[in-house]
Image 1 (cartoon, rainbow, N blue to C red):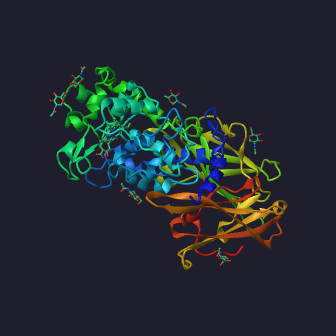
Image 2 (tube, rainbow, N blue to C red):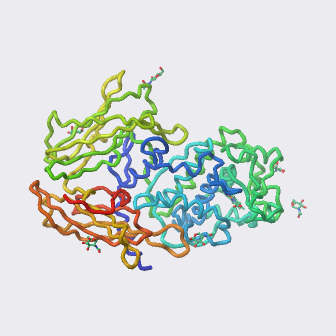
Length: 535
Ligand code: HEM
Ligand SMILES: *[C@@H]1O[C@H](CO)[C@@H](O)[C@H](O)[C@H]1NC(C)=O
Ligand SMILES: *[C@@H]1O[C@H](CO)[C@@H](O)[C@H](O)[C@H]1NC(C)=O
Ligand SMILES: *[C@@H]1O[C@H](CO)[C@@H](O)[C@H](O)[C@H]1NC(C)=O
Ligand SMILES: *[C@@H]1O[C@H](CO)[C@@H](O)[C@H](O)[C@H]1NC(C)=O
Ligand SMILES: *[C@@H]1O[C@H](CO)[C@@H](O)[C@H](O)[C@H]1NC(C)=O
Ligand SMILES: *[C@@H]1O[C@H](CO)[C@@H](O)[C@H](O)[C@H]1NC(C)=O
């Protein structure tokens, strides 16, 4: 595989996943990205990950489709090929390469990937997105909160087969769960917790449903659009229409699984409150079943105060524009009328009492946003300031109208933000109007780089997407191009330029500029225009 050596480079991003106290020390590429995808669902700064599963019964207008069910099933089928003894497989997105296997019958998997497509990036692995999909589906369906740890690494090829199938006998199913690292009781719980949503499709399993039409979608329980214990109670009362219980003996695996311990585990889960806590726990174990080389973070919780897409731009008068958003959590607040200010240190580390930036409430959308099902509420504030002495770090103060001032200093570190390297978006461009003969777009990136760094090379790093045979999600590969100085400024910076020809599949991607330890954040090519402007 021509690209495989490049995957080694990805490990550097994933190495620091420590979470401290209430949150984690900002910035952290993977944690920052996944935290935003998890907690910014609607309103200002929305990522909209939940859109695919909201409301719970939502299915993109296709008969017999329930996205929330498909996302949960995707997580199970991906995990199910884990070999606990060897420490291989598990939630690693290898399912992307395995959609044509008989054990992965149906369109659920590609449907799921199609939705995750636009969230997948260098910082958000498909495996982490699949895990997050379980959280989002359950919350959207009135279910429990499954804690989300991140740091999963995507497989780059198919793994061995091994997903249990309805035709397998009980011993086979039990031993498959055992090799994944789960007991008989775990197995019963996990299957019941999965089969609270969705059902069996006639077009994929006609013998079970008694019809091969797309419309024939036989639900596991009567409340398939609510995450509850009905799958258990209807089974125990023998009123169930679950085809994996009531269908032909050859394929009634739920009956075999549910009754393996004389219904003991099912009886314990009949109570809805017990069902919720049991499922949060077994599904958490399911999504944390990962290859042994993966180190997962602590569970994500929202940062109380988070800088969102801060960026700097060097202006032709020598000032530096510093702009972006501050997200302030309001979930636990009675008083959400907040005055938000930032205190920053100059590039040389010194501060002065005038180094204060006021962050302004945003008028649109009530100035606020939220996570799924009330899991998080926040206000968003916008800031933009012209700095004359640069910046090295900042802190944030929040003053509710009815109580005292609160200081947020990023767990005592201050929020680091350096101006050694400044990506100059106004001088950068993605020339989509003039593709070359192969349909590639010219990405040109200009950065202002401090003169003290010029003796060592500066690189434009581009995350290029490449199509993969039989896989819906493109692969990601890191490309590096050395940037060349082309203009001096009188402000202690030189302007450097680098360019890369991006294939059309990859025109919407991310890039950054690096010199040794100094770097600007990842930026999206989506915010670049067609023409590079003058400085
Ligand atoms: C013995 C193990 C299992 C067997 C044999 C099994 C079998 C099946 C079958 C045959 C379907 C119908 C698929 C279709 O028509 O598209 C299905 C659907 C589903 N399974 Fe399982 N399953 C098992 C365990 C699990 C587990 C552990 C979970 C998750 C925790 C799960 C989650 C789901 C979900 C959510 C659906 C509904 C999909 C939809 O409506 O599109 N299953 N399962
Ligand atoms: C299915 O299994 C049950 C219980 O083992 C048995 O009583 C029944 O006759 C079987 N049905 C068929 C159609 O084989
Ligand atoms: C378990 O529950 C099912 C469904 O109600 C029932 O058919 C079966 O006899 C029960 N098994 C035991 C051992 O009680
Ligand atoms: C919010 O108001 C409730 C009820 O008045 C009170 O119990 C609670 O302590 C208040 N919380 C905060 C953070 O002020
Ligand atoms: C931010 O807070 C940290 C820790 O309290 C402190 O060391 C630093 O000087 C503060 N920075 C500014 C700009 O006030
Ligand atoms: C999923 O999508 C890939 C890429 O388009 C395709 O090759 C594969 O056959 C699809 N799988 C199924 C089951 O349709
Ligand atoms: C991209 O366009 C710029 C400006 O036209 C040009 O200087 C550069 O050589 C091009 N880059 C590539 C890789 O073709």
